[in-house]
Length: 188
Length: 188
DNA sequence: TAGCACATGTAACTCGTTACATGATTTG
DNA sequence: CAAATCATGTAACGAGTTACATGTGCTA
Image (tube, rainbow over all chains, first blue to last red):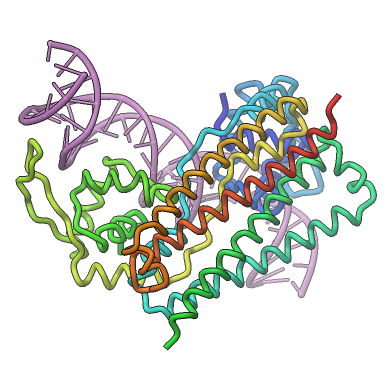
C-alpha cells in the first residue's frame, strides 16, 4: 500500500506515461498547487511502486543525453488509484502558519499588522488572476470545453480542482479585506 | 531562533502562563484548528525556548499528583514573538489530500464520487455549525464583545482567526455543492 | 479495582527538504 | 566556454507521529 505521494504519482501516470524527471516537472504547476515533491522523493517512490506491481518502466533512449525510464501504471495500479481516490481523506492536522501569526497579531503594532495583511491580499489577488487565466484557457479550447461536464474525463477532474482554487482565493481575499477594514479603523 | 512550533507555544504563553500539559490541551481546541502538536514535541520545545531565554518556568506544587512546571514568556520572548508574527509567512507547499483525490476522480465511478463529496459536505457543514456557535459565544459575552474591535486585544486576534474559519467552511461548502451538481447531472 | 485524568519525559520511525554526487547536451 | 536544462540517484538532517516508560489521585 503506497503513501500519499505514491498515489499522487499514480494519478499523474494514469493520465499519461512519464519519466521521473517529467513527474517532477508536473509536481510544480498543475498538481503542484495542492501537492509537491522533489526528485529525491520521486525516484525512490517510483521504485517502490514498481516493486509493488502498480507501475512499470521501459528504458527509452529519447532525445536527452542519457537513458530515461518511462513509467506507466499497470492495471493493478489503476485499480489501487481508483480505490484510494474514492476513500474519504483521513483528517490530517490543518497547519496554517498565517493563522498562527494572526493569533499573535495583538502583540504587533497595528500598522505592521496592516502591512502583513496587505501583502497577503496582494498574493491572493495575484493567484486568483492566474487561476482565472487558466480557467479562460479551459473554456477557450473547444476539445477541453466539451469534456467539462463529463465526470469520467480527466479534464473534468482538473477543472474541479481549479474551481476549488478559485473559490479558495476569493474566500481568502474577502477575509483579508474584512480584517484590513478592522485594522484601518484603529488608525491614529 | 525557534521553530514554528516554538512560536505557537510563545503565542499561547503570551496570553497566559501554562504548564506543558495545559499547552497540549490548548493545542487541541482554539488554536488546534490551524496548528497541533503532541506532548512529545511540546516538552522538548519548551526546554529549547527556555535555553534560548524566551521563556522560563517555575515549579508549582499544584493540586495534581506531581510537581508541574508553569512556563511564562520573558520580555525577550515577547519581542521575538511580535517580530515573527509581523513577518509574512514563507510560502510552504500547500498539501491537500482531497484535491489529489479529486484530481483522480475521473477514475472513480460517479456514484462513489458523489458519496465522497457528500461526506465532505457533511463534514464542512458540521464544522461551520461549530464555528457559528463559537461566534455566538463571542458576541454574547459583553466583556469579549467590547474587545472585538481593538486590534491590540487577544480577543480581536482570536476572533479574526474564527472569521477565517467561518469563511473557509462556507467556501468549501459552496464548492462541494457546485461539484455535486455536476456529478448528479451524470446520474443514470 | 479498573479506568481515566493528571503530568512529564524518551525512543523509534516516517515523511519531506536540502545538500551531495555525476555527467551529457544545448544555448547564449 | 559558461551556464542552464536534461536526467537520475544517495545522504544527512529536521519536523512530526506513535509507541515506550513511569507514576499519582480520583471516580464509577
